[in-house]
Each structure stands twice: as structure tokens, then as C-alpha cells.
Length: 575
Ligand code: ATP
Ligand code: MG
Image 1 (cartoon, rainbow, N blue to C red):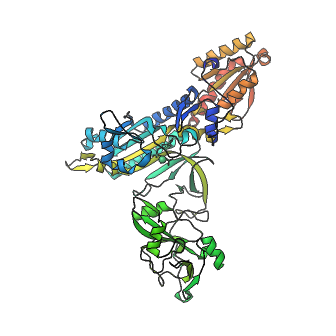
Image 2 (image 1 turned 90 degrees about the vertical axis):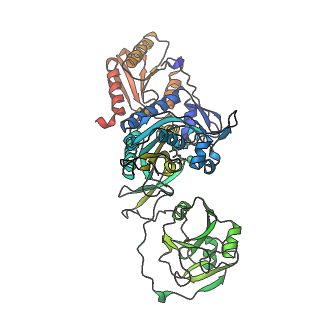
Image 3 (image 1 turned 90 degrees about the horizontal axis):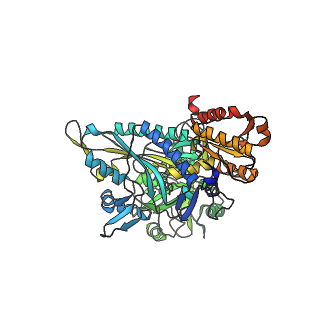
């Protein structure tokens, strides 16, 4: 396309809310514009990148046997009431009434709609398995939209849903999607990692997030340096420690000590002159209205998701001051397991401890020389903590590394959560009615594009990997007023376009420096500079955006050279 005819408003200005580099560069490169909080318009350059990604996704989804559908974005409340999510989804669900006073929502995801579609048309095992996907707009009324299109309110998502006759089939569908996702992100040229993710009560390995590695990412993950274990920090496990033998002879007499105003681990540690590792923290949680005490070593943190999953609770939060007072008889900061009347859950970190310090369930008092078994009993012993850098890999014992990433995709085994509630059933070989087993698989379209920029930029702008680049080549005539230069550039433009390449012809009457700056900013992988001096030698200059490499080529050979580079970068696996 001729630059002079493109709607491509580039600039230097960055809005004050653009905290991350991808947001800044997408604005500066004229890819997106904000309409209002969490709502963005894609301009032509931005939309081309979106279409590129969607094409890769379509090809890989189709290859994996999924079929494309298109479902309504407006969804009736009744379906959400059937699944139970009308109540549970909360404020992210935008609800409204039509002129007949019927209630609706804007789809934040499509489990309900797809399940209703499938249950009406699929009746027997012969029609299964099925995997249906769409690429469509979602609306989630995020509390704090931020980072541009990375966390906005209206965004594109590829969502797929699989339906199987049994667990084995469902696992196969999951594996297929897992493989397809690997192919998609690899083809995009991104550095990514699938990590085990929290799957709520379903548990097991049945949820993976695909993380694009980036320092600016909102998610923390750990991965093993020796084996393939990788997990979202929320999910990362701690292996069950081998229990050391505890000698009861070592137990010292229990002591109550006055610890005025010492509530936090730091305060108690300073006051009693003991290490945080010798103190046990007692946290009181409210799980669906019932109190539980979770005990953990003073220098560790509780992972609330693990506690919630262990208890199978729908909701879990730290107890209020009122609940703490009621269950421990003391204000916040003095809870302990001795003589407490609620279930005590013990984290792995506490199992080998002897003669430790805990709260005394009495204002301004702590206990010293507390011991498990003698002074209190436990209801459960499990992994309740956030993995720390001292922890080893739960699979192989290797060292673990921490990293940050952006969640661009999520594969999830749903089981019968929706099919049961919404009665998506089929008749099996013996004519028995059975519930379908489901999986769901999402990719954030805009977020993936933004994540691609987070990984591929330099001080001059975006550095697109070839598969996502809005155009592959930009031709820059140095001076548009020189006829022979313009003629050569124009001919080259027509020739490259005719050979199927995606080309911008920067025909603007601007200084070369301005044009080079724009080409760098919008991140076009290959730039051909046509200047009088080189042209007199029959040559043009090729500059590779990624490496900054510059090389002269004979005018006759440049098309072939470009074609080769593009082909190779689009299909790196073929080599
Ligand atoms: P997050 O934890 O980041 O809110 P999620 O778990 O709610 O994500 P899913 O429901 O699994 O996300 O949605 C599938 C994909 O949709 C995500 O992996 C992400 O790429 C994308 N996505 C989710 N929320 C947003 C958003 N607010 N803006 C842009 N993309 C989003
Ligand atoms: Mg979310």
C-alpha cells in the first residue's frame, strides 16, 4: 500500500495511562486508539496484525479438527441462571434489559451458549466428539482496565469448546488443544511456556496457561531448571517433606509470655529475639462462613487458593476482626492453635518444628515451646504455602526459577460442570443417557498481539516477528522528487506486490530521516532504501529491522532475496 494513502497516524505522544511499553507503542505506531476506559478501536495497521494472528489460529484449530462457529454476543439471562453463573459471575458480567424487559448479558465467555447449542442438536454417541470454536468479541466489565488492549473490557477471544463421551476422550481433546496452542504461539514467533494453572476444584493437571515470557507480565510463574515442570505461582506445588523423627524428650515446658503490642511476625520476632523461622503464624480464614485456622512457618506465606481448593470452598477470605475475636477470644495478632475450637490445618513447613512460638489466643500474649501433638491436634497436613525461592521442584527435586509472564491462552478441562447443570446428555451404545464431558480453550487476541510487542521492541519502536508483522517490507525512496529514484522504487513496489509480498511504499514527500523513524516505529521487518547514489551502481540497500544489519543488493536480485527471507521466517520449521 502507498503510505500517502494509509490511515497511519504515528506520533511521539504517549497518553499518561500507558504504563507498559506495548500500550505506548501501539498508540505511537497508530495501531489503536482509546474510545473510553477499556474500549479500544483498532486502526488499519493494528487490525492487520489482529487478522494475521487470527489466521494462524484458524489454521491450527482447523488442523486440530475443530470447526468454526459464530455465537451471539448477547446472551439471555435464563441460560446463565441454568448454569448458576448469573449469581456467581459478579460484576464483570454486564447485564441489561431489552424493550420487552427481558434480561440479558454481554458474553464474557460462551460456555452457556455453546452447551445449549450442543444439547439441542447432539443426541447420541455417534455425534461425538465435537470441538467447536469461534473468534469473537467478549465483554468483561473489568474493575481496573489497564495496559491498553492487554486488560480491557471489550476484546477479541478465540474460544473453543470440546464435548466428549468419556474422560479418556476428553483427555484426548485436551491434548489436541494443548498441541495446537503450542503450534500457534510457536508460529507467532513468541517465547512462551505452558504452565500448570489453578483449575479450582477439578484439580490435577487439567488446566494450563500459556504464558508469553515478559518482565512486565502480571503473572508470576516458577519452572524447574532440570525437568519440564512449570506452574503459575498460584498453583506451584511444594513436595511433601520427609518427616524427621521428633524426640519428645526435646520438648520444653509450655510458657505463656507477655508480648505487649506485638502482633506481626516481625514484632514478635524482635520482641522475643527469636527467628521468624521459629515462630508459627496462625491465620484464621472464613471458608463459606466457617472458620479455619491455617498454621504456617513465620517466614512463609499462605496461598489462599490452595486452602480454598483443599476445603472445596466456593469462597475463602481472611476472617474479619469480629470472627477472629469470636473464634480465638482475642483481637487480631494473637491467634494460636492451643485450645482453639476450630479445625487446624497445618502447612508442610511446620511439620518438623519443635518448641515454637505461637499466639496464645489472649490479647498481648504469646506461647513459647509449643509442640504438635502435646499441645494441640491437627485436622489436616498439606501444602498450603506460596512457593519460595528456597523450594525445590516438586517433581524432580531440581532448582526452581521464578519468571514473569503474560497469560495469552488457557486450556481447561471443565468435566461436567456445565453439561450437568444444563443437561447436555447423549445416549451411549447401550441406549443409556450419559452426561457429556467438556473442555474449554481460550486465546486472547489483542492480548497476544500486545504480548508480542512486549517481547519484540527496541528504543526505536516495535520489531515485529515476520508472522505477525502488519506488512513484511517497506520501500523507502530517499527523495521522492528524483524521478529515476521514484520510478525504480515504484517498479520494485509493483514487482514485490505482484509476487505476493505485503509491502508499504513510503511515497511521502518527507525527509528520509522522518520516514526511517516511522518505519522503525511500526516495526516492519525489512526495509529497502532506494537512493540515487546506490541506484547509479544498480543497487538498493536492505536493512533488517531486528538486527540492524545493512546490505547492498543488485536491484535485480532484491525481490528474490526478500522472498527468501520472508518464506524462511514464516516457516522456520521447514529448514
Ligand atoms: P485473567 O486472569 O488475566 O483475567 P482469565 O483467566 O480471566 O484471565 P480466561 O477466562 O481464561 O482469562 O480467558 C481466556 C483468555 O482471554 C485469557 O488467556 C486472555 O488471553 C484473554 N483475556 C481475558 N481477560 C481479558 C481482558 N480483560 N482483556 C484482554 N484479554 C483478556
Ligand atoms: Mg479475568
